[in-house]
Length: 131
Image (cartoon, rainbow, N blue to C red; front, side, top):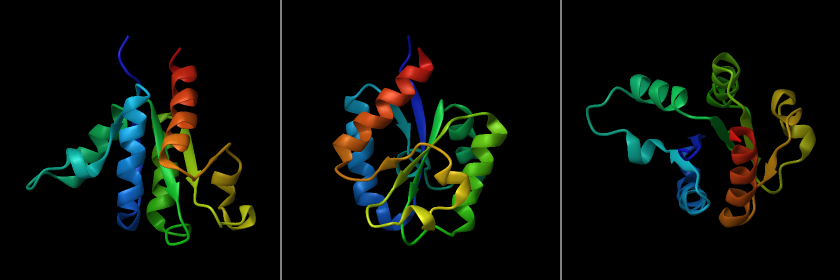
């Protein structure tokens, strides 16, 4: 059986935590598509992202105070729905649940804490779905 794979949607300001999270996911036996590692100079962003989304089993979307109302966040939701992929939101500490857009709040989300703990929760969910 191949490792399940998740697409990581994040904002640039979050990259340090996201890299730690991805490394922790990999230790949990879940592969991750991360733009920093998959998009090379000269590549088409659109083609690479579409390929990453299609080859993933789920989409993990990071919600932060900076991106909670961004169009890209809602694009993540649309892509997940359009491709029939589960969307797993990770919500930054300090964001009130009422501030989370309803389409994300209606899903069981993971509270962002330590990258290892968030990775464990996401890995367990993805592996259950893949079984």
